Length: 144
Length: 144
DNA sequence: TCATGAAGCGTGTATATGCACCTAAATCAT
DNA sequence: ATGATTTAGGTGCATATACACGCTTCATGA
Image (tube, rainbow over all chains, first blue to last red; front, side, top):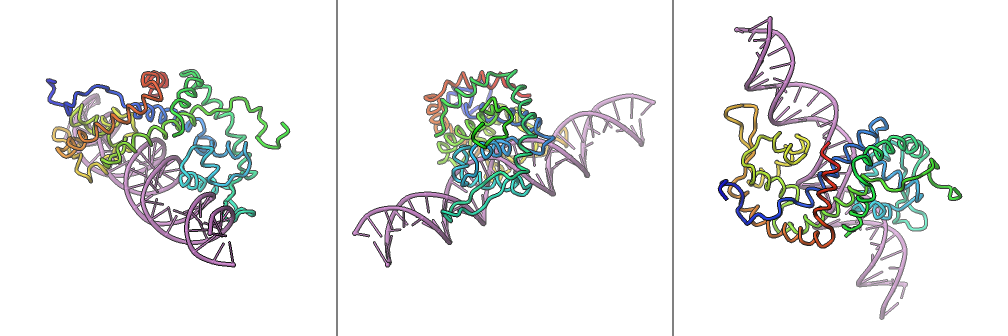
């Protein structure tokens, strides 16, 4: 308390857990995005393609839930993928409310091409941190 | 391989470390933003105020470095804070290139008001995960 | 001094993220 | 059957994030 700075509210913890985690996420994102650069995909987009590849056609809300994303966020994240023709979104037949998102052939190709680059990023990150540690941390934080 | 799904590239790891971390960051962000809601601040903005409070006036680039943010990102993040009168950005005197960002009185007040809410979020998160674990993880990931 | 390179910033563009609010379609209770 | 409720989506708005490109100002060496 000689500095003249700080709200002087007793300070205490210095680190914002949220800030720390957000920063780490930005760093990782940069690593993956760099690796994926040649494919023109971002890691966010890659993740969506990957989910659709594994699960098949999904209504937007389900897809959002799979990715733990806000529904409207997912809807908008689909836009660039649709524009590039990697994903097709069609009205549901049984339930007219549903809009099913599904991979196109081009989408499957793009995913296949991106996989090695993604693995490279996974590998690079694995050299810095134990993926299992990240997973267990994330699990502790939970979804909500 | 009976499913008809998947690129069939041998699969292997199922979890994208980046995706896992991004998801966790989104969850934490939501916790903090909810807690800060009454103050009208986001956790990102809170973090900026906090840095400025501790370090005093800083040129934008330095401020960005402190937060491990891209320079232009920081510049834009200052906008809403400036609009709300919590931060003032003025041209440097010694060096006309510098643009110094500094807390206003209102900014200091806002920060002081936000602190208890932030602590509440810190506490809630601490119940789920060990902050030290998050820090060591982030440190392992490093900045670049 | 003055050309040149470096340092600090801003803008354009594009994606990512979530909230508040609204519409339409299906479901359900009476 | 029909009115209320629930479910699936969309839009407007605001912030967050980063890259590419370009401008201004400072420092420096010939």
